[in-house]
Every structure is written in C-alpha cells, then in structure tokens.
Length: 436
Length: 89
Image (tube, rainbow over all chains, first blue to last red; front, top):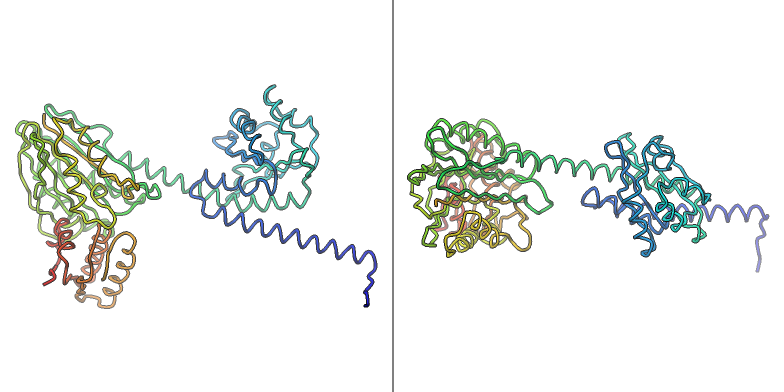
C-alpha cells in the first residue's frame, strides 16, 4: 500500500477548503429552503412569520424583526427557539420597542443601513439598552451572547431590520460567515416581504374603495323598513363587484338597485362605482326602470367593453306599495307575503349590460302591507356544481314561515342558509325592503 | 364546449371561444353546447365576452343544442334575448 504524503500546510489548506465548501453548500441549501418557504406566504404578516421561522433555530436561538412604520420602530415578530422563553420575548416585543433615535442596534441599522453585530456581547450592553427595570430583567434572563442585526431593504429603501441572537449558554458565537448568510437571507426576504406588503395595501385600498362606493346611509321612508348586507368574498379575500343602492327620487318614489360587476379586483370596484352613479343620474330623471336600464346599457356599450355587469332596478311608490322593476341579466325579486308565503316575481330579463338588446320589460306588482321585497346577487344563490334554481329555492325557503319578521331578521335568515359553510367564494349583496 | 363550465374550467372555455372567433373574423361562430351539462355565472361571463368580441368584428355567435338546465340559466340572465340560442331537439 502506498501513501501519498503531502506537506503539512497543504493538508491544512485542503481541509480548510473542504470545510469552506461544505459551509457554503450548507448556506446555499439553507437559502434555497428559505426562498421556498417564503415564496408562498399569503400576506405580509405571514411573510414576516415565515422569515422568523426559517431563521430559528438554524441561524439563531432568537429572531426579532423590526419594521419602520410612520417613523416609529414596530417590533413585528419575535421568536425564541425555546418555547418556555417565548412569553418573556413576547413581553419584550409588545412593551419595549426601541426608539428610532436610540443607539439600539435595530435603530442604528435602520438609520444607517449598515449591519451591526457582535461575536461576544458585553453583558452590560443589552442592559444599557433597556428602558426600565423589567426590560432589564428580561434581557438579563434571555442572556444574549452574540448578535447580528441586518437591514431589510427593498427598492432602495430600508424598511426594517432582522436581528438574530444566540444565548451565552448555547456556547455558539456568530462570525463573519454567519453575518454574510444573515445578510443574504435578509436581502432575499426583504423583496418577498415588500411585495406582500404592497399586495396587502392594494387589497385594503380596493376594499376601502368598494366600501366608499356603497351608500353610507339608507334613506328613511315612512312605513317601510330597509335592510342591506354586503359580505366580501372569502376566496383569497379579494374585492368583489357586488353592489346595492337605495335613494329617494324627486317624485317621492324610492329607487332600489342591486348589481354585480364581473371580476374581483380594484377595476371591478371602480366599474361598480361608475354604474351606481350613472344609474342614479338616469333615475333622477324620473324615467321608468326599463328605460333607466336601457340608458345604462347604452352607456356601457360605449364605455367599459370588457366587463360583464348585471343589475336589477326597481321603483317603489311608498303610499301605495306599487313596484316597477326591470332587470339586465340579474335575478328578479322574491316577495315574501304577509302570510309567510314566498313568490318569485317573473321579470323578463334583458341580457347583461353592454350587450345590444331591446329595452328590458318591466314587471309591476304591489307590495301589500306586511310584504317584503328581497333582491339578491348570485353569490347568495350560486354554489359550485349546483344549478341556480336550487340556490334560489334555498333562499325562498329561508324567507318563508316566520311570523312578522323585520327586514333585518329576514336578512339574517337568508344569510344563514345561503352562505356555504365551506366558505362563500363570491361576494354577496342582499337588499330587503319591507312594508309595515 | 363540453362538460361543466364553472370557475375552474372557464379559462379553457374562454380561450376556445376566442380562438374560434379569431379564426373567422366577421363570421358566425356556432357553438355546439350539447355536451355542456352545467354553466355558472362565470360561464355566462365567458359567453357574453365572446358574443361582444364576435360582434365587434362584425361577426356573431350562436349557441346550438343547449340542454334544458343550461337553457334555464340563459333565460334567467336574459341572454335568450341577445343571441340565437337553440335548445337540444
């Protein structure tokens, strides 16, 4: 057997190289795993939670994520590898956010963009950062041995910091290679977090827009009770295009509209706002519902060509209960009579708005004392693999029976049966007018 | 078109209809609906989009062999008024 003898320093080099390669490989594997875990975070908070979850315990015993919000530092996430230490860390997170002007490492990192770290923390250092005796007690118990704080930067803006800490008792100490790994992790995570935050903001803006487009208050009409419900869809919590409107007309009648714009984005909400305003504009000219919807259809033909919208519009003469109603692609009304029976009023619908057609036919009926008219959107009657009339029948059944229910009670009864226990995917609007 | 047209399959229906319309600009596209057993509101949306697209190109869309339960959906949404829809004989 022969043996190759290498000079001592050559063996040392080879070993060092091998260790270095193994370390790099581990780092790359870690970063790949982190990227995968982060990539399918549903929202901003989940992205932060996932970042902490990949960092602990592999990179540190403890991970804190601070985020700049309105000029203040907010401690968004703090995770400890030891479950029994978590309550202490939670207390620190909730009660002791460092000031952005302080010498606290998170504040320095966020102000300067420069990473801060220490292989061996002077026990006095965390205590010097504490804000009161309790804070001091907590940091003493948590026993910080070594820390790294790196900036979270997206689109050239520092929006937060990631802090990793190992306890003194663990015996671990950070070195330059840990710092490099933390910086790489932060660089990747920052992009994911920023995208999630932007997505959350867009969604909030769309929801806010939609809420602002629904009437803030309902008119008071003597002898009538009006109740409405709007529930956003739960599938991905996206914004929907369902809407309703109730408004007094110049001739003393009451105008009632319910509609649905296809799509679940901010564009659907915007189109819905346009339709609602346009409908009001035509309605105040005191034209009959069929003509009002025909005007709306012609407007849609020359404007938003790609969106499908349906709408039902009714006028009610409060003194007599006389209802005139027309629909474009939407459901006709259900009427719950005073005796508890329910009738689906036949209204010959025109096609959805935007499709050329003859003007919709109007239906007329009288809302007698004790009757209630119920207008719904398809989210209430439609379930996967079930035809529309099955859903309509379910809503009809929910309205029947009750002894002199209020409009509010009828709304609750409909929602109770109509909302799919598996979560309603589509958004839902419901408008009930009851004559007392 | 075949099968159930709902949220999960509507994308496919949309692209099939768009292809058929683009292949015959200004022509009449007839859709055989005899194998379509279910259509929800997103399916209605796909048909309406296709109809508008066809008419913008000075063409038209017709539906043929519509099953009774699907016909009911077309009646509920007023589409029977807007385009030629022939029920299954």
